[in-house]
Length: 133
Image 1 (cartoon, rainbow, N blue to C red):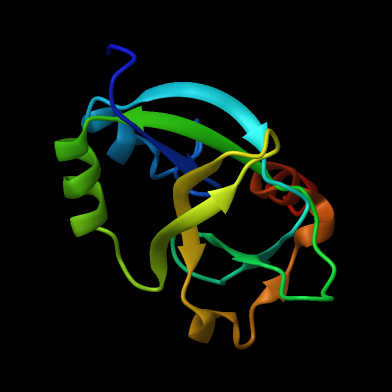
Image 2: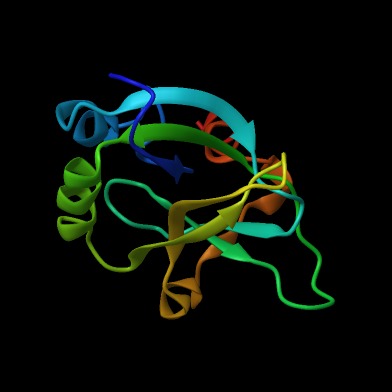
């Protein structure tokens, strides 16, 4: 894929090697980088099937952390198809990554956090999953 396209930050089930990664690959997405968010985010295990995390930006005065994400490049048409097929409570918003850029990426609707387990201290979905196997 060329350098043209839109970047999408993924944080959980769409990461490389995770169960929903094929949805990106099937649309012709290309992995650009593995990086981290800025240190203002909180991560939760939503208790879904397949397992998925929810990422939220910490509010004013709330503690947060830098969370592992992957950046994938998609054509505008592929990104549109991906977003159209996205199941609630997942949503696409804007995330600040470690280098200060803002990119489109996975966030979660706030209602999904009721009863969810906070896993921010693991620093990312893969680390959490490895520690809880």
